[in-house]
Length: 476
Ligand code: GLU
Image (tube, rainbow, N blue to C red; front, side, top):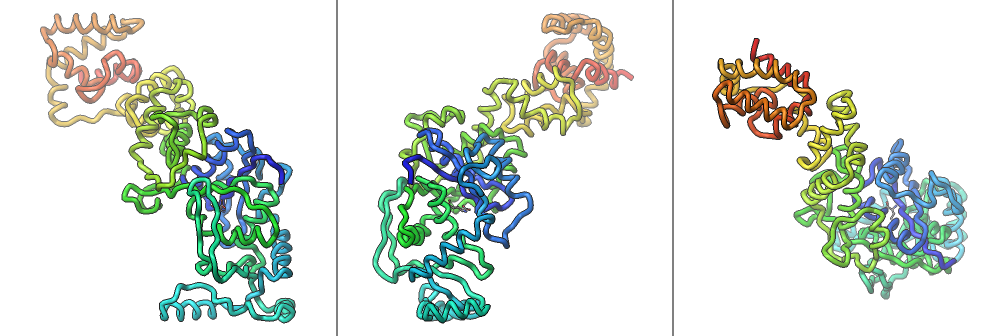
C-alpha cells in the first residue's frame, strides 16, 4: 500500500442524498483537500432489491451542485475503475472463495424458515439473537459438493467466539468489542452478490483507501472488517467514525421529523454554500467562535482532530439563519444566479434589471429563495383588501389624490427619491393632508398594506405601469 492519502465516500444509492451522507462526503472531501489526498466516490450498489432508477445520476449531480467533485469515481473515472460495486461482483466471489479455502468462511445452507425458527427460539429463551453457527461443522468437501449440486447457500465469515478486539478510532480513540457479540456475518448472499461488509473491505483495500471516514452507525461493523483484513493479510485503513446526527429531541435524525434529503433543501431555496457551511458544523468546529466558512476556507481550516464524539443536533432554525446570512452577504450576482429559477417559476419572465432589484430587495428579508419570492408577491400580483381598506381607498379625497398622482407620476422622468418627495409635498399642500392621512391611502393603493418599503421602491419594484393601474382602479 502506498503512503498516499486516499479517502472515499461510499454511498448505497437510495434515490436521494441524506444530509448525513452529505456530511460524510464533505468531511472526506475536506480531509483530502487539506492534506493533498484524493477523494473517491464509490457506489455501493450490490443490494439488488434496493435498486432505484436514476439514483446514482441524482447523487452525482447533487454532489456536483454543492461543489464536492470527486477526484475519482463513476463519472470521473480513475485508475481503480470500475467504481460501481455491481460491476465488481466476480471479484468479491473470488475473495470469498479464498476465505473458504483458508477456513475463515464457510458455506451455510440454512433456509430463511430455519433462520426464523432459530431467532424465535433464541428470543423465547432470552438469548441474544444471531446465527448459531450450525453450518460451521459441515465438512468442507461435503459443503462444496452440496453447493455444486445446486443447493442454495450463503457464505458466512467464521468470526472468533470469544475474546476481545480493539482498535484506535481517530474520533473515538480506543474502541473495544467482545467477539461473542459479533455474528457470523453473511459475506455472499444466496443470489451470489456480496454483502456490504465483504465488498466494502475488498474495495477499500484494492482502491488503496488510507482513511475510512463514515458515520457512527458503522462502528459496530469494524470488528468484522478487521477480522476480514486479518484473514486476507491486509493492512486496515485508519478509521474515523463521525458522531450521530440527532433531531432536536435527541432521537436519531429521521425522515419523520423533517426533511433529510439534500435535494429537498435545495428545492426549498437553501443555497449550496449555506448547506455546506451548516453541515460542516454538525460534528466539527473551528478553532475560534467563527461559524461562517466558504468551502474554499474549509479546505484549509478542516481537521479530523476537531471532530466531536457527541451527537450533533440538526437544528433547522440554525440552517435558516445560516442561509439568511448567505442571502444577505454573498455578492448580488451570485444570489441572482440561484434565485432566478425560483423567480421565473413563480412569476414568469421578468426583465433583467427589475429581477435584480427584486432579488436585492428580498434577500435581507428572507431565509430561503422561496421566501424571497414570497416577499415580492405584493409587487407582482393583484392586491387584496379588507372592507376597511376599501372604504379608505374609495373615499373622495383618496380618489382625488390618486387622480392627481396618475397625472403627475408619468411626468416624473426619471423617477427619483427627490421627485417622489416633491410630489408628496405638492399632494400634501393641494389636499391639505399630512402624515398617515397622506401616506396610508397611497401605500394601500400601491402596495396593499400601510407598511413596507418607501414609495419610490414600491413603484420601481412593481413597475410604473402596474403602479399606475393600481391607482387607476380606484379612480374609475
Ligand atoms: N455503503 C455504506 C453506506 O451506505 C458505506 C459505509 C462505509 O462508508 O463504509 O453508507
